[in-house]
Length: 334
Image 1 (cartoon, rainbow, N blue to C red):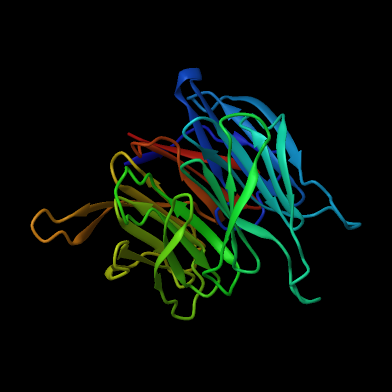
Image 2: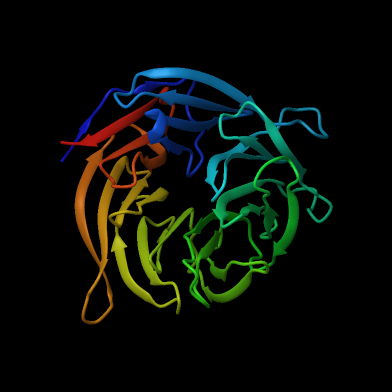
């Protein structure tokens, strides 16, 4: 069972964007950072374990060329082996900051040369893989940035061309030194998933075709791909082969966010039906097949959910954001 804890107030509502919540735990400092997007700004908050807000500030998208302020599409903390960077994507480019959001270390402007006059230009989908940060774009390309141990000498090292539709989300997990391991998955607006092996050069291993609905959110855990779709379903695939093992009719409306508690294999799903569900993933020790168990369901009434994240790697607490909701709602296990 989970109970509703003290909420963290926001200066304004979260934007109605999928995956619109990022959480960074800092156990050494007994702090949790939260990031939420609203229009041309991102709100960054730090809170004590009881949910007491300690500090709040706003980041704005770098304007670049254009007269109107660009809209931010996502904010996400990327945990690399040697540093943590805060990545902000918008309709103009990609901004990278030190983890506290005070110092911008890199700016990458999006090239709209290939876009038609009626096509929106934006970046969306952010994940760290080793010493790389991967960011998706409106064109379907994934930009791979090589991150140094310190300083601003960040380099665009590669562009991955596996998609024809805008990227929606990217998920990664540590490769742990295995050869030919699938350690990154990218999703797009058509529902297509591409499975990659990271490294000095990223390699496309296989594709999982879409079926007519977008895939707004995707996660990767111990070789299991969890994909949340616009029809409310969650599919669990084998990452090495792309085979579908489990299909869950999880929500009555589109899924807006997935998250994984990596220590225990708990999957969090949030949908536009106001519900949040927690599932336990595992493998059958005899057959190796993926198995799933429903652990908890929570209704956040009268709220169009747009972001949901676990607040710890053991899955004992989670937080959600909603459109027209000027707070981050927190829940913890009883």
